[in-house]
Image (cartoon, rainbow, N blue to C red; front, side):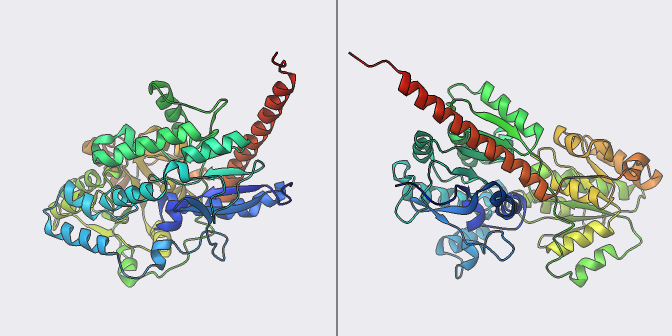
Length: 461
C-alpha cells in the first residue's frame, strides 16, 4: 500500500525539548523548527519535530509561535530526588572542578547529564530504535531525518542503518568540536561522551551541516586525522551560517530596576554576554578591567550569562577584584534585559577562545555596537573588519585593546560607518533546507542507480 501522506522532515531535538534554557543550541534548534515549519511546505514537505522517548521518536508539541512547546523538565513537578541529592552534595563540597561537575545543570557537562545519558542508554538500546517503533513516528523512504541538537545519551546507529537501507537520508547539525579540541577544560567522561556522539554522528549522517566554514573545515580535519571512522558512501560536509533574531525577539520578559541601574551611568559600560564557561574566558577579562581601573581608566564591566560549568572560576575572579573594580554579574537576565544591555552599552567585549559561531557578535553589530573580541578564526569569519581583535590568552593584549578604545576612542571608523548586515533566521534555515533537499535528491538518485544495477546484474547459473 502506498504512503499517501506528504514527505516529512523529522527534526530530532530531544535535548532542547527536554531541557530548553533559552540560550545557545536550544535557541538555534527552536529557530530551525520554527522556520522549517514555515518554509518546507512550499517545497511539498511537512515538518514534524520529534524527541526520543524510550525506544521511540515521538512528536514534540509546538508552541503558538511555531517553535517547540514547553520543555519536559519545565512541566515536571519539584526537582527530582537525584537532583536534590546532587545539590546537597555540591553544597557540602569545597569549591573546585569536582563541585562544578556535581552542581552543573543538565544542560552543561556534569554529573546530571552523565546520569541522564546512562539512563537513556539503558532504556533505548540500539536494537530497539526501529524506524517505526510502537508509538513512534513512521519514518518513510521519502522522508528526511535531521538531528538539530546534540543528544549525547542516545545511540541511533541501528535506526540510521535501517533508514539507509530504505533510502531515507540522515542529516545532522554540527555546532563545534570544542570538547575534543580543548579536552583539558572538561572532565574526562563528558569529553569521551562527546567524542562518541561525534563519531556516531559522522558514521550515520549522509550530510553533516556545520554552522560555519570554520567548523566545516575543523570537522573535515577531524575526519582526516581520526583512523577507523566509518562514513556513509557519498557523505557530504556542508556549512550554513546561523541567523539573528534581535529585530524580532528578546522583547519578552521584564527589565528589572537593578538591571536598568547598571546602564544608567556616565561610566562607559563594557558588556560581555555568554555562559559562565571556561572557554568564554571571563576571568582574564575581569583581570584586565581591574588592571585598567588601577591605572585610573574608568569602566564598568557587566557580565550577562547563565551559570554553567565554569561558574567557580568566574566567581573566584570576581572575589579577587572586589572593591577595586566595577564589575557586575547578571546570571538570570531575561531576553528583554539582554536587548536593553546591547542598546545601552559602550561596547561588547567577547574574550572567548573557542567558539563554533558567536551570535553575540552578530547581535551587537546589528545594534551598531563596537565589538572588541578574541582573534580567533570564527570571529574573523563573522565580524571581519567590523571588530577590533586581541589575543584572548594575553591579559596585556586585552588591557591594551580596552585602553585604546576607552581612552583614545581607537576603533576603526570604517567598522561603525559601514552598516553591518547579516542573514535572518528565515534566510539561515532556508540555506539549511536547501542542504536537506539536496540530501533527499542524492538519496533518490542513489536508489535509482542501485535499482538499475540490480536489474542489469547477470543471473546466477
